[in-house]
Image: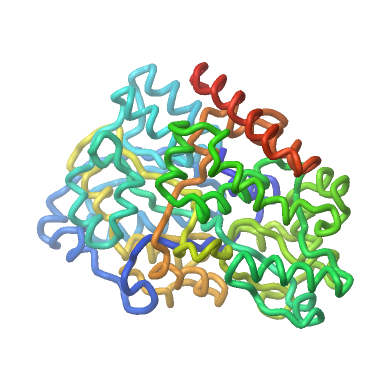
Length: 446
């Protein structure tokens, strides 16, 4: 289960998501490309396509309703194709695995875990979507194609995503301390010290939920080691005892100092994610910043107004690193190849498809031809405008790894990073624990 989806499930709140994409030109402003010019097909050709598409997805509740708006927009161009969407939720990998084993998968699905997509590709369960490459390339930067490419073939489209490289802060705490949002890690460290001297804890850390700690590590590692090393570590092609890992752990130490976290070390390890958000969003604040994804505002249960009480800045660069973004994303894939599924896949690559959902909020896209004016609020537009600036886009690392290492409460990465929170001076010991756990998980394959 992806980390941002866990948070939403726990709080059942619709959240504005934002996304930064790699190397996309002109993401800030203009209108969208029409489907007919970027994958939708001419009106006459579209009307000749007919059939049914069964689609199982992770989107439930309001998300399912908003996906129906995408289907409605598709049917304006393809009136004879009927897409039947079934909201499955986070149990989707189990449902799909059973369906594939029984020989009756849906025609299409949206999957939150890229590691599971790869498993399906390796099993030969998915159909390649090379027919959509042209329209995909017209609307997305090359990095986005690589996220859905396995073995040199295109299998998926990251249709909906979240930006996990954001920092949320209390406007009043920053104002009282006389500081501004930092853009570099050096400035962040200085800002945190100034805030601490003003009487407010710089950071709220939801250490009771180990995934928040992996997200912090991943953002630091991406900026210090670069996207290539990040991808190698994600696949365990380099060891967790590598110097680059230890360097990132050393950088994390500045956040994990007891006097920098609300409640100190003991408080941070007992604080859940939702509570850590409230510590920053309440007025007066108990902490000034929380380093987590664009879903943070939707988790708050205290009264807070965007821009007045809270705001956001991009995760700072480290040693002059280029704009980089870690994402959680839902990938649309195809089990059956028919004219109807091909039409719908191509439509999902267009700005018309993205805009149909984006206008409601709770959605982000790497589609460079969808103007940011479609987004419904200022903060979402702000984070979305960074699309043109990011040069590196990567998937959440722990979502790509065996679940016993990257996605299990109290063990693997989650548990080991909690150990690091308790004792941040033990860099070498933590690196060795991570490597031992990773080796065991990859050997087991789950």
